[in-house]
Image (spheres, rainbow, N blue to C red):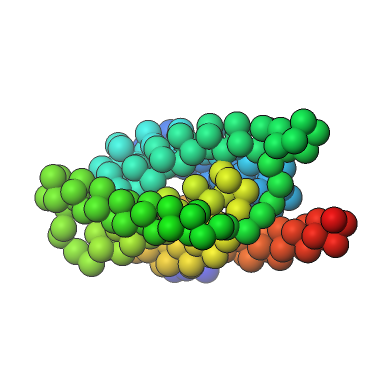
Length: 210
């Protein structure tokens, strides 16, 4: 048992107690945010803002610039999504769950490509192309950028991007030495699968009601 514990958490022996506490708080609010997203609840955004704010601080301190950029982007998109989800589309209904249009799919491709380029330039500037992790980071960052944009617009396809990126992030963050965050992404993967099923059911029911 001790060997398993040491394998999972030994790296935290060199961390500040405050940083460990903040990571756990950020993970807790991150779980809450994804849960509220699954429930199609507006609280996805305030809980997400708290989580991402803490992670921006921690990741900057740990010099994980790519990951910090992801969370900074989440923070901004959470504010945007909060507005979109509460905006009335016809005087009575707020923005409903829907599928992407051709135009939105094209925009998603543009966001994906722009995110790849942005992270590449940042890593190049800070001379961070030191291992394969940087390349995986670049790819997952682009996936998360598109996923967050689609979620902010209440598009069901956002779950495809979350699921793929979350699955990749589980071993990636464990390899980086952030066990709590790795566990978080494992939980995110499960919640994202159920989130897609729940949103798909809501979308189907709304179509039947028309």
